[in-house]
Length: 209
Ligand code: PRP
Ligand code: URA
Image (cartoon, rainbow, N blue to C red; front, side):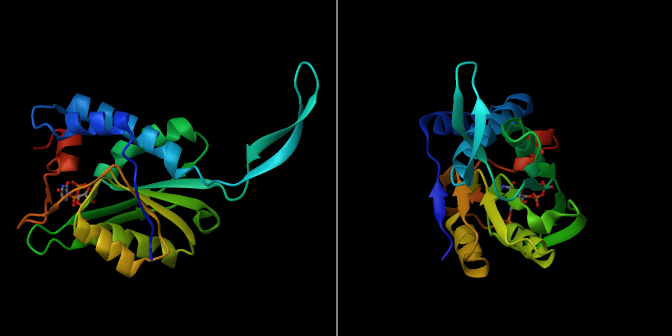
């Protein structure tokens, strides 16, 4: 069973409430999404393995720690996932960035793929798959399948707002993938939008409402 982590730090809750407010414009929405992504990145990377190595401080030699194991890749689901990349890169500046382009068909709500470009060595990396919204879970599930087809075995899914329906789908389709959310909302509406949610994340980030 996938592990669900809701990262409800007060700073994240405060910033997310401003994002949800319909009066918040694109500039602030983007800024807050970047800030929350950075704060969530701190928790999402908590379990990264460490190794010892020796350094010399100005005073003596010591056994220090550094991150070991697989290198990282950040993979946003286009478009809205792009808004989470810079916050994560500020924590992990040498991570590679892949892109998976999916849009939801407005009638069926099923994801349609239109782009995929991943680092050539993605199979050897720990991948953070990012998208602000986990609604039906169709887009994230397809993106996870795509990553697994490319040989990736270590994936974490990081979203801002999730619906129970989306969490259930990922738990069923990809029980090996931990899910990180800033908030687990109530339900989906008839158009498969999250309630209370924050509206259409891509449109709010890019001002295409
Ligand atoms: C949104 C969102 C997710 C998807 C979530 O993207 O960013 O990718 O919907 O819905 P799901 O869980 O039901 O699949 P959208 O299709 O609106 O495309 P956009 O990011 O280009 O606006
Ligand atoms: N995509 C969004 O951007 N928002 C939702 O609530 C659902 C899907």
